[in-house]
Structures are given as C-alpha cells and as structure tokens.
Image 1 (cartoon, rainbow, N blue to C red):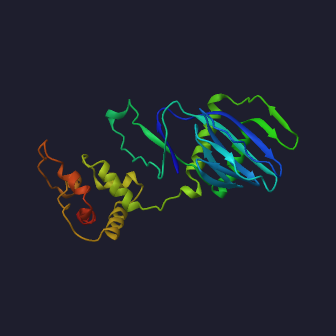
Image 2 (image 1 turned 180 degrees about the vertical axis):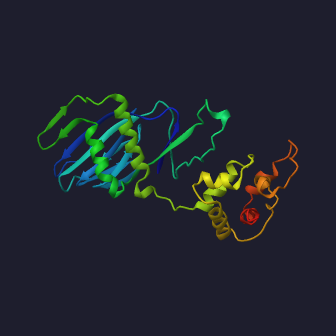
Length: 281
C-alpha cells in the first residue's frame, strides 16, 4: 500500500522519539486521530497489525501507521528491540492506494514562473531502507529524538531539541526521501516508456528531439535507439508535428471540436511503434 499526499500543503514533523522494548513487550493497541506514526526498527523486531494486515518489522525496515485506523502489537518481542519513531501530519488530504502516483516532469516555461503546479508525495507504507542509507536514516532519527521510552528502566524522558524548526523539517523530508527510495518501492526502469509518457503529457507542444534528449539527459541518438529497440514496427506518426522542426513537415491544426490528431495518435497503443520510426530522419 502507498500513502499519497497531494501537495501543497506539505506534511510536517510533530515529534520524534526512541523506544526500547524488553523480551515479552509488545506495542500498544491504539488509534491516533490526527497523527501518522512512522516506526523504524534498528535492533530486534516488532510484530504489528494495522487495518487487519500483519507486519513483521525487522532491523532496517519501516512501517507507517495512518491516523484514524486501529494498530496494535500482535506478538511479544522475542529479543530486546530498539526502534525510533516519529509522528507527523498534514493539513491537506491523503489517500491510500495500491500503487504510487508518479507525476510527470514538466518543461519550465516563462508563463509558469509564478505558480507551482500541484504534485504528489507517494510513500510505501512498509519497506526496507536501502542498506547504504540505513546509517544516515538512524543518524537523522537520533537527531530529531525528543522522547526516550525505556521499558527496561520503566522510564519516559523528554528533552528539548535545540535544532531550529526549519532544520527539523528539512531532516524530516530527508527521511521521506529515503523511504521513497526504499528497496520495496523500486520499480523497473523503462526509459523508452518514460519518454513516451513524457510525449503524451506534452503532445500540444512543439518539442524537438534535442530538447527531449536534454530533458532525460540522453544523447539524441540514444533516444532513437531506445524507441526503435522497444517499438520496432512503422506506423502513423511519421508526419507528426512534434518533429516538424526536424523533418520540416507541416500538418493542419485539428478543428476545435475534434480531438487533436497528435493526442489520438499518442494515446493509441498500435501507433506506439511509429514514434521511433518517425524520428530517424
């Protein structure tokens, strides 16, 4: 499951803490009305249930518990378990989905210098932080810790955090970045499909091959090779006005009441192979 946050507004950190559980301890049964609870285990394991689904959270793994949904520990800890946690929230909306929302990149234009287009933050609910990022994750969690709970000593200590709020929120967003890059969130990289999706999003624009190549940090010839390798058959896009500056072609504009021919072409699966054929000239 993924947690989707339309932005702005951005999620914000409330407080961070650390808990030490003894063998036999388990997490509380509770519902938090206005708080996300993020757990990151760095020693031992926690057995959790959220919304009827069971999770075993081991060292290097995280679990995000959404607000207004019951969560609880399902089993006692089998070893001493140490985990950091933080509470965060958003004044905006959020949703739970089975797949992330991936916003397309937009070429900056002069008319868009004074307004930010809405975007989304997509976080997997459960996953493993990349091994190379785990030391950084632990270090940041330690920096934002203000509450320390130790079941061995039956203590709960509070401390002032001298880090400015702006810095705390910056650290929080670094953690969210690590979660977004977690191993369970990795999707197969398909540059040809990404290029085609980009064209779908910008079908009204007069794009040049070198502009698209620059957007993806590719050589123009590599863009052609990618698409010819993926989509091998000729089709109907050879006269596409997307490439008119390369091919010196022209095409009448569609009447306002009819769908754009470029839109129709780029959203029809059987024309997909034509794209690579069109840009070879």
